[in-house]
Image 1: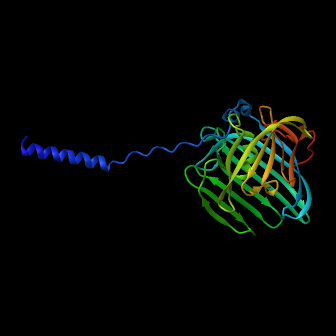
Image 2: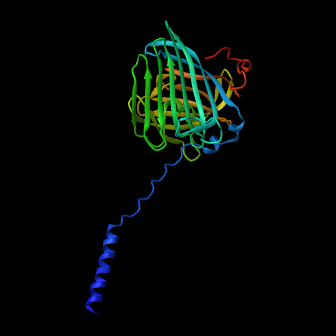
Image 3: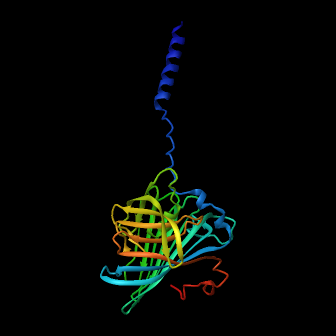
Length: 309
């Protein structure tokens, strides 16, 4: 072989080795975390009837909003409805032709305490297919101030936190998202949708805006029990939720470390009752109906609820 050919072959081999050495293997895509919600339940035909689930609960607790021993009792209203939501705009889509199919869940009540009257409202928007959250918002009036708080789960970024108030300061920050992370007000709907078909224990996280952190939680499905409520007697699955540390609670102000939920065994998996394990607070169904509340007056249709929460 001529020197020219040897030189050319060596150059070719060296170039090949250099190219091979400099080429980085393509990064494997991160696997998606296994689903913890029951998609068949979340996408069932029962949500396509053009109506909302409206349910009312009686709350009893042994501590007031300041953590002082004080027996309190008040009515809570909730509704659950399907609509279209824009993840980029973080708001409902009104033309019906775009956006993502989502659930809107609301919990609201008024509470009187001395001179004060508290009006509180939580609203959560989450994807229908898997209940991954879009946003939790909170509004309140307490004779001191109006207040607005928001947890926005951006599509490809962090969880954004906003707080605006006349008396309690203003705040805007963010913190990193985690898989299977949900805002506190979404927990009743999450418990209803958890998938226990393959296991009796499901783990998730609670996003806590005040501290910019996630609290680990574990839900364990127990047996079926009969639950007595003002609305009647129902068979229900018992689900026990335990948190690593207490989390914010719309019902208990701050949660107990363990809460127990009873979800109906019917196709709607209606939340029938929940309570703190230490009995500090509890919430029990009073009445429920399905109604297009935006175009009909639901109040004359109720048998046991006589006024607005």
